[in-house]
Length: 568
Image 1 (tube, rainbow, N blue to C red):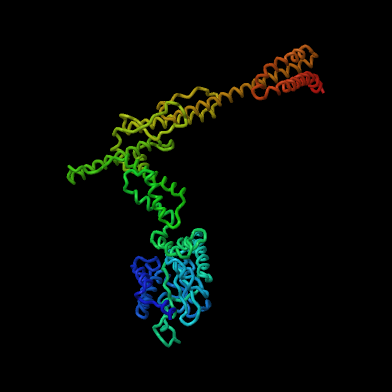
Image 2: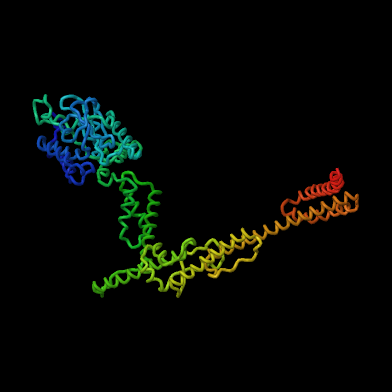
């Protein structure tokens, strides 16, 4: 009889009271599938409450909300006979699968002989629910998870690996065999009156040991891991006292981060040492502490966040109500301040748009209103207002910091700024046309005019410099072409003279041409030194001198040949 007493489900037992307390939930605060279709869960709980004992009803209220609206169930353990049905029908079946293809709500095990002693040796907070046959020796162990493990394509691999590791450790601790996630196990709330061959209705089909209820995977791994878990011996009760606390299973970095940030949220200026000390104190309460390096980095991020938040508050003007003001006066003052802030923001936006106005668009009030997203009336309101913000060219002349993020025109209005920008656009158009004219008319070699808008705008300065570079290139092209034409003319005249001397047999002209070769080479040497290394200059001069001599001899001999061919 001790076994029957051990498996009894008295409503005044400690485990039954724990399950009943944990099942006190609001039907509107459930998972998404039960919130969308609560009729399945309500119908199943109502049916169990009418036909079952209070102990079974407590188990159903604790476990049924974790199941989906439609589950696999069967009257036998044969997997081929299982069907997918809603919860109202599934509670009348003898076997049910608490998991779905997309989520694991529980870890399933098949018990082996001698499981009772192993189950009692487990810590209280991770003991699974035991479901054994009231007639035969078979039985199952169901470890309900507090957070379902998503196994669909969108699920993360880390929780799935964590569930597999916890399943292996629990199977070794119980001496049980692991079951597949979609396997059928004994339905804890099945009663014999739902069976046609049952002679004693309203009796439970299974003997139930409720266990610890939903558990965290990290708590299972912490307590059962041979590297970090406690020894299940004489000190088992002492080691499990700490792990039975609600905060013991919250071992993630996210919980530590949220806890520390929440603690210092209202602090005016928290110090990094205080943040680190509090984080280390909270970290000591976890079953598996977060690494010290991670805690340090986390505290630095939190401290930097509060510092940036404090700096942003310091830059913004305070708009707190003066105690001496009436509510209407405070409201009027706040309205004036808000209007001023909005007016200045619109003014800055208009100034920035005018300063960056593109060249290919005409700058008018209508175009400016469309670009700023305001009405033309707003543009006319700002047209003659004094601009209080602006910019200037860096004194260093460096092009690295040539930016116009801010405009500084003290005493100027938006109308003056628009007129100034139009002058800048005219200067930019002039320099563009100047470069085009240099390409079309290379003989025009006059320097570009200085900008009429001044040198404050780096864009104008760079455009003027581009025009100067284009002029230098045009000059080089012009003189290069002229020099090439001059050399071609001299070459043709020298060739004509040598041919005429060859026809007259005037050897003196050929000798003068050969004696002028060293002088020509001396004038060519500076040009060669600019393009070739010094060690190659002598060889190049020798080759060029030989070519000049051969050319002179060929031109001199070509005179008689041309004369003979003329008379043939």
